[in-house]
Image (cartoon, rainbow, N blue to C red):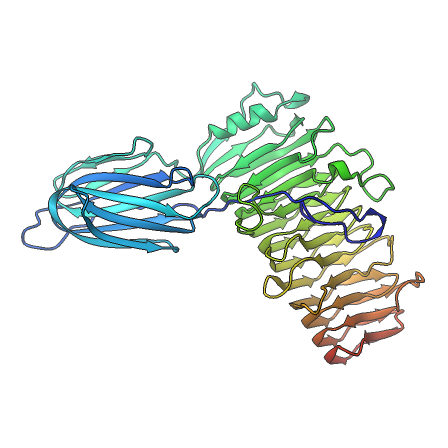
Length: 525
């Protein structure tokens, strides 16, 4: 469950105030174009690339350049902006052409009479952070360009045939190593120094920590509105050495895009984390290991998290925008990693569209293994694939999808080829999906998993389009539930085929409202 999610059952159920926000961005493409404009009266052509950033507080930037007579072509590449208006004006401010678009790139052509032209880029609406944009302009003549906005980064070179522009946008692939002045022995908290160093590193670069280092934390390491970074821990541990405040995370990624985090370990400060009677501590239940807040593309590969008061990994909205304005996190990939000993969920997805959880170990979770639990029906839990993971002990379910949300915002969830080793702790089914008030969720596939159960194997309440096939579930009578392979309540269009429900009382148990259930090839022993 995310920062504001509620615990799903049992004595630990508690309302969790919301918190998280977003930002997103695809890497801005910087084009350098040299184009000759055809026409008898055009001696040469120039191309200039401007770049800059827009924020809600400063949503407009204006550039000027001097051209010959002919046609000006402008291409604006942007991301993380609701929509953008590109306007071409002459020296008097008269509009020569204008277009608005919510999709990139935005292309505008304008006839120009020669002389000074203005190009105005304006973001529309509200958005988090300061997303970058790139404006490539091809024009007649070979005049040198200037810009009227000091904050932009433009350098221009001209020749008799073309104008080539370079910008201060960082080249891809730069590698920056953490300064040796930042101690890597956990002798004192260093999150402030780490963030200062990271702010000095350009986007689209790789940040490397000391091999096998240990970095102490009292507060959050915040990565905000960054694009294209690769953060390589090189086996380092980031350890919380104090109790900290209620919403601390070891690492928090707010908005941004195309991030990679690899080869690092985070440790919280919960001495009772895991399936214990005191692991869940409400005042600190929002302390996460990794917090992904509306990032538009992020991969966690070869990481680990343990000993948190909250979730080991939480994915949610960007709090700067709030739940109603923030987009979901998108394209979240978590692979080859280890999550164990949580105070709350192991992995909590509360506002996400597109997630892959694959080849991880997930165990000793005080609540669920993977919890898809929205806090508000406007949030999303869509296109989630949970594949090839190994699950250890869990207090509740291997995969749970409860809380707020229904069609079309929740659904298309696939659970395949996972292995559940246990041991079992409670009666909660390995897979549990529940909605309320005759509001449905659609599109669930549970295939080729190996699971354990004390009661029902899989429970679906208010779900449409379900496929359950090729699973092996070993039942032990825990004096709870009905020992059904699949329990269905008000669910529709269900296929239960070729499963081994070993020790179950029946393959399918359904209520009177459930319709269109197909079952075949299932065995109970």
